[in-house]
Length: 273
Image 1 (cartoon, helix red, strand yellow):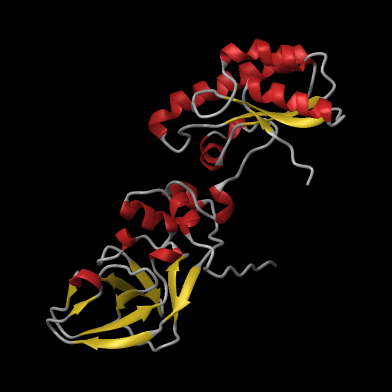
Image 2 (cartoon, rainbow, N blue to C red):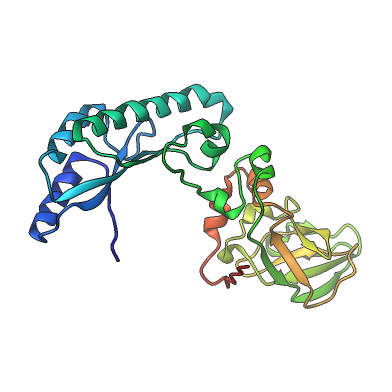
């Protein structure tokens, strides 16, 4: 597959050089990760000299790129720290480049970094969640176009009498005659339970239908008392409305968790122009 590894420590580099030697590889491309403040993976300041020594006079690997990861480019309150990371990355990567006399690709910006710090794009950027039309705040969202919609159809419609309940644990009690629609999607598909109990909604016929009761494993119920709809009609869980960012903010999480929670049993359909 011609995979090119991310190398993040002296130990990993030594092991990979040994492997490359055993496989009779030469100038195999590697990508050096620097830890400029995330404290997750990457070479630190104390590793730089050893990194340079390992790479000098070595024909088994060649540095294709040097990169780092921003911790908080989406938070204006952390702009000073983000700039510190960027300047540290510039300094460290230049030290490596000068010592090895190489011209690797350099990159550090993610989606929020691209928007908030465009002057530090170096040689390339890493558009992550922005690729799916999702940003970390409303300003970012204005620059992006939604490209993903999660939708299903109405499975059954019921008229629930006053005083009756809907769903597990009787979390929703009808205070008046209520028309409900059962939707064949639930938390096993990636819809968070915390989006239920009238905190969240779906869109049917361009109208909001509040989610009532607990979200079930494979189904959820919505109030369609004010919506003229029928079995088989389309139901939008997220897309243009509600946006993934709205769901995430309401339930106290991040858009990444919503998107990556959609399970494999949910059918994917890809469109291209």
